[in-house]
Image 1: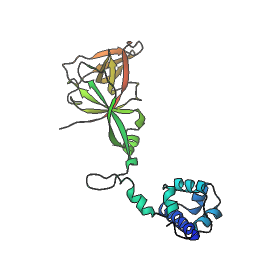
Image 2: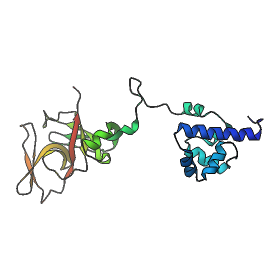
Image 3: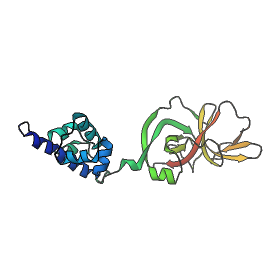
Image 4: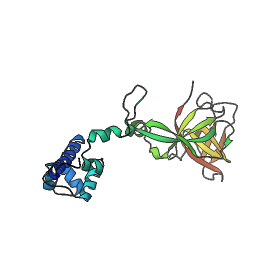
Length: 237
């Protein structure tokens, strides 16, 4: 390529710009605006009538999601595209759009559905994928406030079993009727809660072997906190 006439090199740069813009379905006007030049300048570049400066080549490469080297040397855009990271696929080979999913952190923490388990470490272990549409439209939740932990114990048997994964909405910390994760005396508990007259919160289990107790929400114990509402669970059968 070093032996090509200058006008041929300029024409080749213009062809690369036009082909890449077309591939990305960008209008000439929108690309010109993105790069910060007049439409007539963009037209001259694409037609090989004018050579873009080095700084403009860098701006073009950024706007076209390619490299300055590709635009300058005339390497085919397809070659660069093929060397990029391949698309994510499911087990059947179908392309997967990662934008359709949110990745919720799973913590190495067990919420006791029994008498409680002290948790010394609350570092994320790995993420779990959930569909963004489901989070937004069915849970009506902000994914930034969601996390997954594990159920430990038998007090909620039949509803939440030992080893179940639970998705918790950490933004819902005003306990009403439902299943919530509570912190009591340094323990995490997954329990049924119910508001009762007198500003009390009744905390109970589905297993009758575990006695219910109440918390005065107007005078909460020092080591009591509502961690969040359980909005989903998953289990191995």
